[in-house]
Image 1 (cartoon, rainbow, N blue to C red):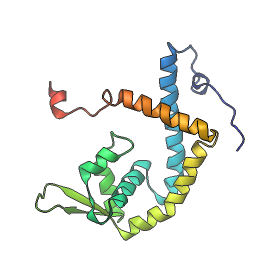
Image 2 (cartoon, rainbow, N blue to C red):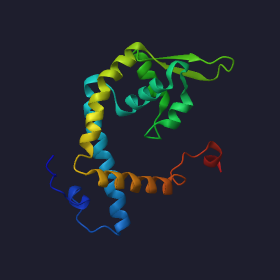
Image 3 (cartoon, one colour):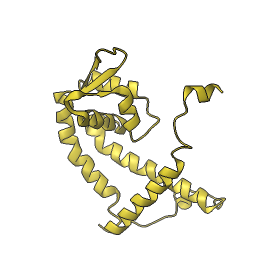
Image 4 (cartoon, one colour):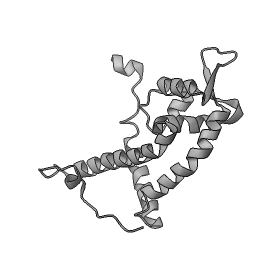
Length: 173
């Protein structure tokens, strides 16, 4: 694949003034890149009428297998952590892609299962999303891809506590 013409993030967002620091430029570049790649993946899911968050949740549910998975466990595993999981599951349930059941003996817990229709949808969508994943980093060679993964892992680990969901008690303090 030919290498695309590369623009610095400041040019891409038409920033008139220089960034205050390299850290600010790196943060903006990371956020902008996540947005651009997220939109590209979202577009490949349009034929199935799914958002990326719905696709992500459906894949997590399918991966849980016949035992199902609790709603809170799905939320914890989502790529985009701030996702409102109940609304996503409502849409998947309304579309017939998942089913939900109250757990026994703790009826407060809701377990989710992929339906046959959900399985078929993922069987069709997965290869298209996989190709989109490859295309997203096609401008990088294997070494650069491995370096990118490592750098992103470092940044994510360093920010995990700062970006963790606040507990109810922390919000009330």
